[in-house]
Amino acid sequence: MPTPTYIPLATLTLTATDSELIFSSIPATYRDIVLVITSTTTGQIGQTQLRFNSDSTNHYANIEAGGGGSGSGFSGAYTETNAIIGYQLTTAQSIIIANIMDYRSTDKHKTVIARQSIPGEVVKMSAHRWPSNNAINTISVKTQASTWAIGSTFSLYGIA
Amino acid sequence: MTMTHISTVTVPSGGASSITFSAIPDSFTDLYLKVSGRCDRNVFSFSYVYLQFNGSSSGYTYRALQGDGSTANSYNEASISMTSALIAGGVTQTNNTASTFGSSGFYIPNYRSSVAKSVSVDGVSEANATNTTQQITAGLWSGTDAITSIEIKPWQSGTLFNWVEGTTASLYGILAGSDGIVSVS
Image 1 (tube, rainbow over the protein chains, first blue to last red):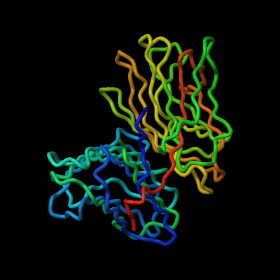
Image 2: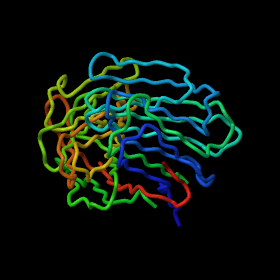
Image 3: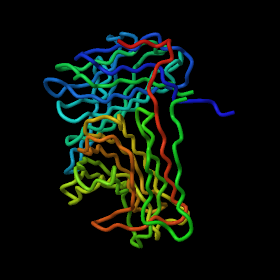
């Protein structure tokens, strides 16, 4: 019998504005986990930042490429105290889909592959590395500026 | 299980001008459409998926980035003069490598909501040749009705074409929820 996958772990739709959410008690049951965010902000365009196990000391390696609808696109790489997986507008909902590979392994750094769709603005793809061999058991999601608007949704799924 | 198969359409011998998913159930959180597509355009190039929600021919905007192995470029609905549908993904054409189909994935979150619908697309017009293109797209449909139907056709440079035999499209529903262990706050 096929193994069920894309198991819903937790979901939250904001009924009040907020600037940080934490997914905690993530079980070491799955192979990968997927975070899906659809959001707008209340004040200004803001980055969406991921942090694992509250670790702000191991700098996260980020690489990205994208296009704004004209020209040849852009690409960049940088190191931050968070994985910068996207940003959101005050208008239409942005989509961020972050695949976190092998999250429970204890013998490798953790890799995230993310896709960001910011309507009317930018489409981006990015990859991020958390330089730690620790299993991920909490994920902090934060918006750098302003707050997420009511109706923004955050859902976590387990991939068997 | 949350990724539930809703329906698959396979184009038979003789081809088809479009593929339509209608009466989409309102029991999921997000939708995911997968397309394995080949069309009858007979030019050494590639095509896109032309997608409409609920039969609507207005309100589509998008930003895309594509690359062909040597050049990358970004386009939008104004630069390719198409606002009556979402143009995204990749479709292989009939004179490209035999038995090869383009692959596209359309993630449609909150399809039942009463706000404009955002779409995230990944696609490639596969071929064992130099005219393969891979692309990512951020799309938006301004319609505020729940999505109840999706229609797709192959398109390139202002012209619609036909799907050829073997093209398949599958629609999945994804339901968010809780396992009772993980908390979020």
